[in-house]
Image: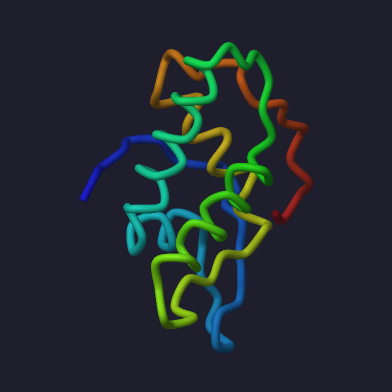
Length: 108
């Protein structure tokens, strides 16, 4: 599993099966999502993209995962999109500034 020292001041929360899960908990439990998004973002950058949307990458990941799976095991909360964008820009220097992010709302 990839370990990152990146932490959020107020992590996004989500509910899966009635249980509250922070973004960092979700990230630690699903490291393949970070690695897949990293590869997709680096590929887009290599193709000359200067700005990309995290939602587009997530939807691409959903589509490719669904094509290779016979189960509905991949669940992703869209609230984590800005967190993955920030994490990628903070941990992969080549991706700095590739995603547009907004200020965080209190409690998110």
